[in-house]
Length: 150
Image (tube, rainbow, N blue to C red; front, side):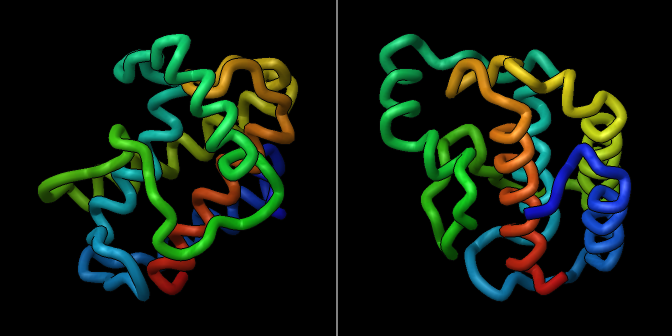
């Protein structure tokens, strides 16, 4: 698995993102390319921006039991995997804005480094290791870039 804390792996993700065009079509799924970019940004918004509410204790328990292993484990996501409601993007988004936001988030994560994420709290899952953060970021990016053939 790629490492979002290594410059060369981030550059590879960014190169793949730069291959996308505003009319790129998915190989599967329903999202447009601008929606996919906005969807990928949600993961980073939950870390860096205070715009998503923290799930209540009961919901966090359910998410830890039912979803955490899938989200932060080593196994890649399958096609058409179900997503959480806050990740569903409706309507058109500005392709260039969402693309630039995603590249900036990738760079910010890499610049902060692995130590910054060791034990950092995730809104839905609580404290994660830097490996779990990496798995979540890298798997999600790879999954959706593959979805759009880049």
